[in-house]
Image (cartoon, rainbow, N blue to C red; front, side, top):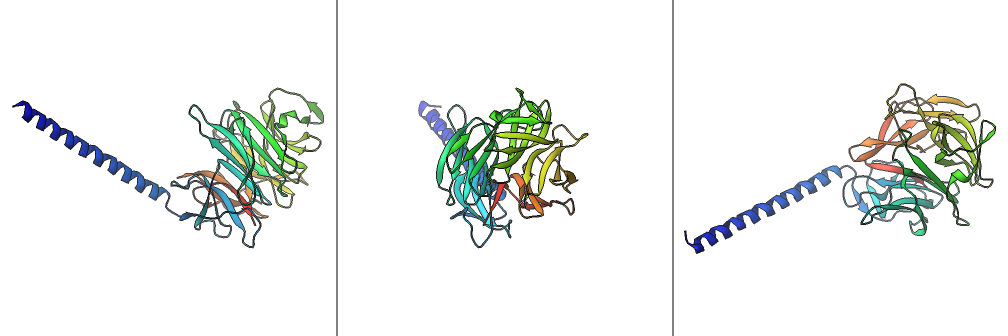
Length: 340
């Protein structure tokens, strides 16, 4: 075979390999596209206007978890049709909450070496008002009923509440004065009637009663406690043991929280309970799976929470009085808030 023949054979082989490579890439892209379309199936979603302002129609705003161009964006649906078409805002959040026209969006900032995180305060049209760097991975967020006070919790170390090897930092921001209380660990703590000073104190999961009073979880000495706090006095006091991520009912009379139940798996140790604040009587809810979330009240008698799903998380709902049964409400969603 002459040099010219060998060269022609080589060029032909290169052309065949290039064609095969191109077809493989196109096939993979088509498969990925079909997979995205499959996973993003269900409710259609399109870009539009999302507002946190009060309106005639009550809405649910949440982090969209469906694969596709709007994944992680805040999206909205009518509260009465949680499985309906979604409107995406273009604003991405890891955690979110809103009340009375104020929103808090905990975001990741992707860097060349590592990610950092921030809390962004939003107005009713999702426009940024202020931003604050946070010390770790976002995990909880709440806004007081008036919209004035904002709270968030991040993991400073570790990334799950299931074990004991983690540290959190919880902050409270007054959006009227823009005064930031960077860590609840600076608060005075009264435990069982006595002052507590301990190096292992952690706080998380604030729920506001108003602009001054709140409830939260305190962890110390390997145990967790429900605390009642005062943002003006900067104090907390313990009320009850084995309470995590409390969520206060709209009328302020009950809390739904997650409770560690002996005998359950160390990786999934919680069950949801309701607590009557007048009597301190506990009632187990009908959800029998372990819920690692801070529930949101969707009405006076129902709560909403996230559980693992095909897209990461789905939203489920259950009555708050222990009756009924849990049911899936919305697929591919996380961190809901009700507005309007």
